[in-house]
Every structure is written in C-alpha cells, then in structure tokens.
Length: 214
Image (cartoon, rainbow, N blue to C red):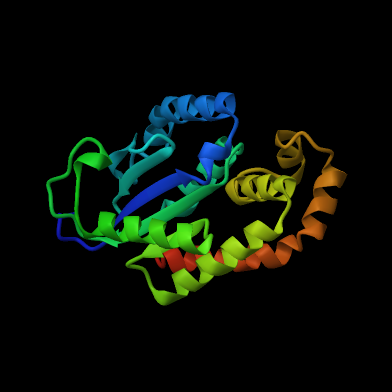
C-alpha cells in the first residue's frame, strides 16, 4: 500500500466518562490498557500498519491497512476492559506522512476522519462511529449504539462475549467463559432477542468491510 491509498483505517478507542470512575478503578484501567498494547499489536499484527499506542490517558490509537479487523478489535477492547464503556471511532482514508512504528507518529485524512467521528460520537452518545465510510455504515452505528444503551450492564458484557467469540466457541464453552450456566446463557440470549441482533450485526460487519477478509 502507498500512503495515498484510501483503504487505511485509523481507529481510536476512548473510554466513555472515565473521569467518573473511582480513582482506583481508573488507575487500574489505565495500567491495564498500557499493559495490553503488546497483546493487541501481536494479535492483529498482520492487519496493523502502525501499532496501537496510548494517546490521551484513557485513549488508544492504531492504524490498520484495511477495515477487515475493525469488528474484532473493537469487541476485544470492549470485552477486555469491561469496567468502562468504549467509543470506537474509525476513519478511512489516506495518510500524508510516512508510515512509522506507532500510529500517533502518522498523520493524514484517515486520522482526521476518525477524530471527527469521535467528536460526533461524544455529541450524539454513539459508541461506534465512522468517518469516510459509506452512509449505511453510519446508519448501522446508530442502531448499534441505541441497542447498546438500551441494555443492562450485564447484557452489554454478554453481547461483547457473544460478538467476539461467536465464531470460535460453542455454547457450552461460551457459557463457561462467561461463568454462567448454559441455561442462563440461553435465557439471556432470548431476552436480548439475540438472533435478530446477530442478523443486524452480520449486515453491519459486511458494510464496514465489504469483500475484505479478516
């Protein structure tokens, strides 16, 4: 890829209202986020163009070569740092500086689009936001966010498990990882109308990265 390639995706993850967390909880969150950077950069090394790094306390930023890994990374963050709600803002576009080891060392339209999407998310209470993507992606982000805020904290955490592990774990192992009985997971899925959520998620994922492999 060249720096003028419009497939670059800048991804910013920002903890919502982190200043309202108890000081001990926020300090642990910041420590855990910093400690996780090596993990996230290893897990998605093939998708990453410039590594994730902390930019503003409770905010991390990375540069991807395409949108293919956006969904997995977003839900890994939500699942790993579940003590906070996270805005995931993505901007697609080119870069105007050479690639560097970490994303904060790079600049360009994709970063500006991601930052603008983050501002929109904070204003409109979105937890997924996009700039430089098709209008359908923006519309799906609105549906996703409204659904998220309608759920209880337990349901939000369950959704993160289901979204991240759905393709890799069966129902029994998924229930075990969530520390609940399989029957409890079944009841939770039913109360959340999960088959409908899953159908919407599949359309959302396809809109984010049409024709792109993970």
